[in-house]
Image 1: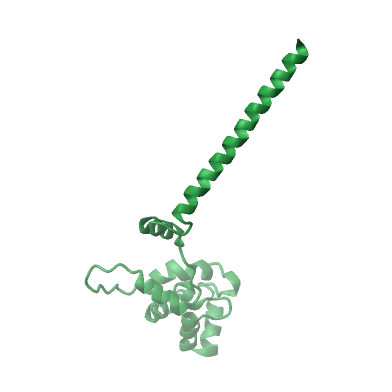
Image 2: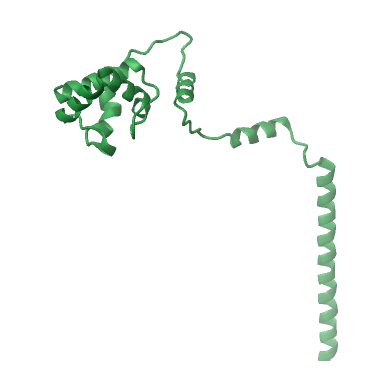
Length: 168
C-alpha cells in the first residue's frame, strides 16, 4: 500500500509541476506578444517629456569666467524692466569675497593688515598692476577673487579698500 501511495504522490506532483511550467510558458508568450505589438520605441509624447525633464541635470559647472559671466547674466531675474543693480562698495566686496583669503594669508595672499607686503606690491608694479591682478587673477588667486559676477569697478574698489586697511 505504501508503494502505491508513493507512486500516486509522484504522479500527482509531476502533473502539478508540469502544469505550472506550462502555465509559465503561456504567460511568457502572452507578455511577449503584448510587448511586441506595442513596439519598443513607441512612447506617448507626455511620457517622453516627463522622462526628459527628470533626466535634466540639476546644475552645471562652468569653469570659463567669460561663460560664467554670461550664465550669471542670463539667470538674473528680470521683472519686465531692466533693473541696474547698484555697484557694491569696496568694503562689501572685501567682506564677501576677498577676506576669505586675505584675512588669513591663504596660499600666499598678502594679509590685509600687512602694510609692508602691500607697500612692496604697490612699489613693484603700481596700483594698475594690483587692479589687473585682482581682475584677471594672479598665481593662486582666481580672476575677480572667484566671483565673475563682480564688475571691474567693484574689484578696484575692493583693492582700494584693502590698501586703505593696510595703511598704504
